[in-house]
Amino acid sequence: MEVNNEIRELLTEQFPMFESDLIDILSAIGSLKSFEEGDELMRTGQYFKSTMLIVDGLVKLYREGEDGGEFFVYYIEAGNACALSMVCASQQKTSEVMAKAMSDGKAILIPIDKMDALMTEYKSWYYFVLETYRSRFEEILTVIDAIAFKAMDERLEFYLKKQAKTIDSNTLSITHQEIAQDLSTSREVISRLLKKMEQKGMVHLHRHQIDVQPLLD
Image (cartoon, rainbow, N blue to C red; front, side):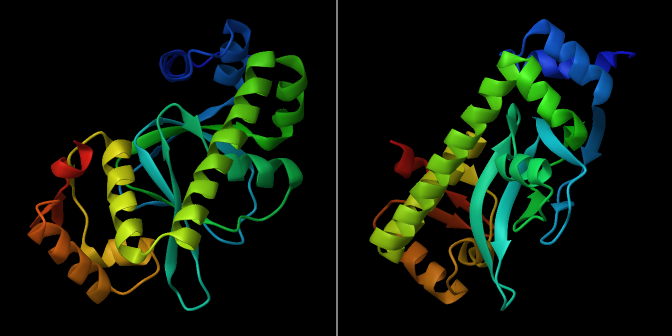
């Protein structure tokens, strides 16, 4: 099989834990997909033909309720994979989540019919898949804990901290409505809580932008 050198370079840079032979085979069987901010990469009810390794950009996973509301699950950054797509792909089940690109980026698509062979033949892939499952499961538990045991003001503070950490920036380009959708509440509630946080000096509010520097101190 012919190796795609561009894919090989991206894998070497973003997935240094992969052994050289694995990078070669992924570079041969994988395909490179570019996406733009706002693109829908995964839909509820969709069957998967491949799993995604993100090599550039940021992707948001969320669930869509029967009433059309959205609930944030987690982000996938460069150097990570979508655990849910791995599970659905390997078991030939449909997706129960949505995925949207939060920035321009690229992903390497690995065909699902190669997954079993990769798991048995390459230890670094096997451990990567297990670590992906573990880390995403911990993220989901953290989200559940926030919902079950924290008041909305605490959930909002936790959410803002996580957003800032994920994008490695003190400034979030996000609207009150988008936050409300992620936290399954109303825009009015979020606006009121953000105003209180601003009065306490915890955030600085701008149009479609929130400076969360004080939360990171």
